[in-house]
Image (cartoon, rainbow, N blue to C red):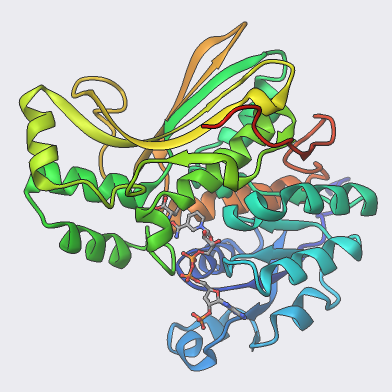
Length: 347
Ligand code: NAP
Ligand code: HSE
């Protein structure tokens, strides 16, 4: 006879069952009894579409995301994207002391300091591993494994859609429109793909990474971009010219630590020519690669599938299992982070 009682399954309010939410729901339903997780309800906008996808066989469906977030569940998983109603749902769950898992980098980049304060004051966990690089575990590495380091620089490919477009244009000769269409079909792109191709999604991830590395939440407004932004100015001719120099064009996000004064930190999202045989040059398709430079560890490189249903569900479920084990928020033992001051000099 086992001396250990099986833990009761955490009852989950799943807000959003699109690319990521449906993958999370199916993975949890497929492992019923193995993981201490159970979906109690699913919020979507279009019930018929969710029914056609078979999601009603996993849990009851509703269009009332706010109501589901405030219902008698153990944890709220926010996978709707955007700010409204995601902010209200996350806020109300945290205020009620309920843990929240989200993959919503835009929400964190715009309201991170407020949500962190709300979670800390309410004693509720807020976890967001999948908000950056999907299931590649960069958030927990910064919070825990690199805690002894002063991080001076984070540089990386953090948007799968744009990397897919650039590499399909470069290796297959696809048009920009065809590559974007395929990225949308695979489930890499945001609901509005302008945030991918114009670099806003990468900038939001950079803000979240900076918070984990430096202890304050920079504003999205302080990220500098190319003109035109993101990959919107990249032409087949520019890709071919880079190839002629044995280089590849990549959308690189970079945060540089300015020292004790966070107003001297710099953040940028820019198309950059990198050597074809470098780590960034060899990162193709929806892959992400992030290099973190710390004073003790030197350069640490994390790489893997940075977008898509499987990788993102992996990170979301890892957060849920961490909550089931009683682990706290993604920031772990790091001190509370507040909004960063505006930059000290024009960028
Ligand atoms: P998606 O495919 O557009 O799915 C969004 C889901 O939320 C849909 O089920 C949608 O319902 C539902 N929804 C939206 N607004 C709602 C509302 N007001 N009330 C109820 N339900 C609502 O998006 P996704 O790609 O799964 O992304 C979800 C989140 O994960 C976003 O924050 C995204 O940035 C983040 N993320 C995505 C990936 C990725 O690879 N896709 C990776 C990492 C993080 P309907 O379908 O009925 O409209
Ligand atoms: N749209 C995002 C990307 C999803 O392409 O990287 C992963 O965050």
